[in-house]
Every structure is written in C-alpha cells, then in structure tokens.
Figure 1 (cartoon, rainbow, N blue to C red):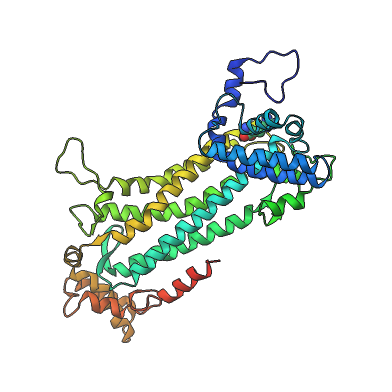
Figure 2 (cartoon, helix red, strand yellow):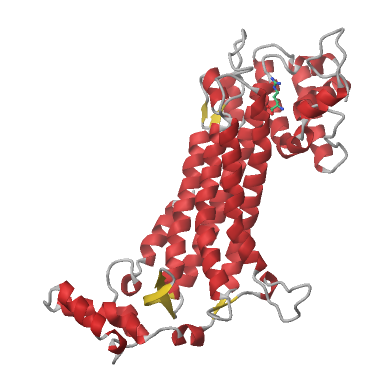
Length: 431
Ligand code: ARG
C-alpha cells in the first residue's frame, strides 16, 4: 500500500495494523466505486462553481474520473490492496494523472461524506431494483390469479380448513408484493437526501455548492445537517434492509408453501425443471433446492440487519465502527435481490396438479359453508356451528369446490376477488 492519505511524518506504518483497519474495504468498495466516482464528478463541479478549481482543472478531473470508471468496468483498473480504500484510490489516480488538480480534489470533503454519498447512491439504485422486482412478482401473481381458478385446500394450522383456490393464493401474494413495492418506494423517498458537502460531519469554511451536487446527483433534497448526515449512516441502511426484509418475509412463506406443495405427500405443484436438483447419492431424488434457498434468504437479510443494528451502538459523529456496515449491507441487499429476481419466472412456469388438489378436498371442508348458510337463514350462528360440527362428515353432500368458491362473495374472497382493485394499486405504483 502506498502511504495513506493521512500519514504523519516520522511515524512508521505497521503493516499488520493497517491490514486490520483496511479490512475488506478494497473488496467492498468495489461495489460502491462507480457511485463514488459519480459523486466525485459532482463534487468537482461544485468546487469549480465556487472557484476552488479552475474550469480547465474541473474538465480534466472529470475526464480522468470517466476514464477511471471505464478502466474499472473493463477490469483494466483493479481496486486492490495497493490502496487503503476506494476513496484513496480515486485521489491517488487523479494525482498520478493530473498532479496539483488531483491534489485539490479533496478540498471541502472528507471520506466520511464521500462514503455516505457513495453508499446512498448505491442504496437508491438497489431500492429501485427492489421496487421493480416486487412489482414484477405482483404482476405475475395477478396474471395467474386471473386464470381459471383451480380448487386448492385452504389450511390453518396446516390442517385442511376450507376450500381455497389458486386464484386466492396468487391474489394474496400479489397484494403482498404490491405493499412491498410501495415500501421500497417509500424507503427510497426517505433516504433520497444528499449528504455530500457535510465533510467530516461538521461542515467546512467554504460556501460549497451543495444545491448543485444535490441536483447533479439526482437527489430529491439536501440532507441539511452535517450531524444528521453522520447519524443517518447505518440508519438508512437499516431502513433499506427492512424494506428488503418485508419482501423476503412474504417470499419465505410463499417458498414454504411451494416446498410443501412439491412433496409426494401433497404433489399440488410441479416446478419448472431448471429449479429442481438431484442428489449426489440418491438417483431417485428431485429436490426443490432453489425454493429452499429462496425461503432461507430472509435469514440473510435479517442477519445483516442485526449486524448493522449491533454496530450502531455509537455516539454521534463519524466512528470507524461504521465501516463494518458495508459488508452486512452488501451481503443482505445483493442476496435479497438475487432471490427476488428469480421469482417471476418461477411463478410464471410452475404448474398446478389439479387431480391431486381436488383429491385433497374432503367433505368436512364445507362445514363452515353449511354453518354460515344456516346462520344467514336465521339460525343463531353458534347453534348452526354446533349442528354443522356434528354433521361435518356429511357437509359435502350436494356441494362442489366450484360452488363453495363462487358463493364466497365476501369482498376479496374467491367469489369477488377484486383483482381490478389490485391491478389499479399496482398501476398507481408506476411512474
Ligand atoms: N472506510 C471508511 C468507512 O467505510 C471510510 C471513511 C474513513 N474515514 C475516517 N475518518 N477514517 O467508513
């Protein structure tokens, strides 16, 4: 590693201590590097606006920043242990190429607001991707909910309860993922504030053009207080992970259903072949590994959230502990997105096994219909309930799953799914 930016003369750098402090930073900063470069360009423009760098210097700095981004993208520049972190790498490269102009680039900024703005831009991008993924899942669910419904046992306590349907199952997850998309959008709006220009956390004695950097970077607003900018590190990461967790929680329960429904005992669902794996020893096996990993993905996000929460036991102001939030953030967000992005295709192509589903509907599952019919005809519900309980085994007489589903006219249930309302809510999320 060349000399750190902050090295004082006369003090020998200890390699082991440096390695410990740098940690995984150069690896993690690869994830944020392009965002850091984008923010650096806006910072340079801001400096030019207040005369700290000349127009020529600004043009050269921006040209070199673009070249660095291009080199990084095609692998010609590797962010590795030669550097303490991504921020130092940017300054080192600009100084190497441009001399004094490079040495001016850090005027009025600190790595503290530099890392904040880079992770903020990255988070905005990932929340936008979360929004897209949730809307794609909701869309497929709505399409499949609109297909002719197949009766499906509805379970409570994992015991057969009432007749449900594939349309109800899909509509339920559609509404869930509409909410999850909304949550992603709301979280994006919450964090859409520019921390660049807050420097180390206390501002600087320069009239930095924060309005310009806010506009240039596409932020909705400036994060005004330098103190709050530092307080929001980790806090906004947690908010984003909560939005991811909301989606992955629904996915966990969907995946649980699918893993259950693909067992030989249920056999309600056949997954597309690409989602099924074999066993290394048991030639007969067809395993739903993908579905299981989708189910497990919530745990990763929850763990990332917990890790960041633990790190945030801090006083105000920048503390180096915050560096460790990056690993947890990348782990949770990238894994969560990878999981969610597989779901639309899986849901589009999974097939219901109608004979097995129909065979699983037993007469007692109409007992609730019987009790409610009598109650609607004037029998006090508790009496109707008792009578239906005693005759539960005969409840299916003259009844069909289709009849039960069609009569379920309570709004949102199978007789009145209100898919149009869900479609309208999904449309309203488009912008
Ligand atoms: N790698 C550091 C982080 O992620 C960058 C900021 C370093 N700031 C400092 N004052 N040492 O937090």
